Length: 490
Ligand code: GLN
Image (cartoon, rainbow, N blue to C red; front, side, top):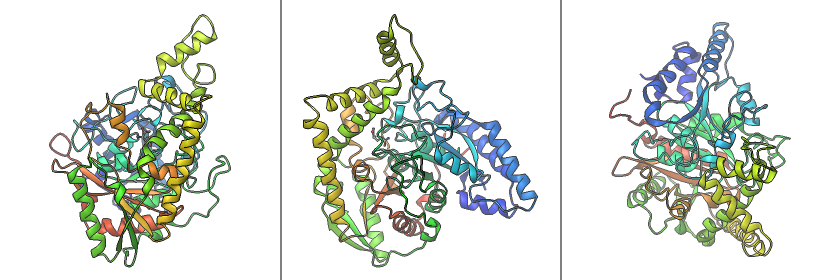
């Protein structure tokens, strides 16, 4: 048995039963990184030494007969926009190339209380702007299922690391699909919790009213465990929810009998890949067999979601990224005066997509255009929220594709930003409405690339999502298959 192939809940039991040590497990994952990281490029920074120290601490604890927390001794990775004290956090941008945060993000503090092994920081689209990880200023990440394809994005490094056995679990962030879409492309489970469920303190801001941190894992069970660790109120994030955190593992029951599942016709978009549609329709039939009731619904404003998102997100980004001026933050490129210095800094250190969004955002916010673009987008955002609220009067969850296609070839879309934005059609509406969503593997394309099924819930209905996803997952075996690299598993 390959240790790096196993989900965290299996490895946790093996640690507790003393069948393996945390050091052996960490070494197995590090060896896997040695074997395949050159092909995949999931990491920006590796913290191997501290990883082995953390593993040794867990082993000492087990040897002393002490109980260990769920994640204790289990190697995982963090997206590089999550601040880690003393460990570089670059957001895959040249402007933060040498930024070492003086503090931990709230989620990192929570994780550290559970003593996991942290392997490093994962690659992403620069400042989380993108859906393919090709916008990283350092290198692209390759999909472990076919290294000619993208892993999705912007949390592509996290998804690829989990899919390739280079991390047992990972955290990503999702502003418009950045956890769910790479999970779908890489055949892993990814959840965007309800806006406010997980603290954003220490997550480098892209679009603050949409950003949310969440888990990327091998299966739904691990997702529930990881959410238990990271969820909860935080006084440092004024948008964080005060709602009590349940034990999400209690939701891991196989039962969807009588569950009302909404099927929104607008999510089966024109141009959707035939293999994706087939896999989703097969999954829906499976839910029917499992006892759920399938109800056709309409979310009529879905067609405006992309335009709304691509006004609101860049507007917030333009504001958030003002701090990278070579003074407050950012690598400074000198000039003859402050104006030239800031211009040089921002021109030379931001990538093309980031500049594009700063320009769109400032345009949408500028006098004369504010009402026509930004304000109008806010109003449409309300209409999208109302569509869901109305649908949830009749259904318990909504099921849809996570992405309209499987992973595409590296380079095939990067020169056509509009085409790339259209990829987000099934994921951005949830962020606009603040709703939780989970992507679970539900099949393969005819090229054997993974396809993800998206389950969408009411605000704070993570338990319903987990129960629905778990019941489906346990009825098939997609989550058990690992990506094959280089024609064979190393
Ligand atoms: N693909 C979307 C974008 O480019 C979503 C990104 C995200 O969720 N961070 O903005």
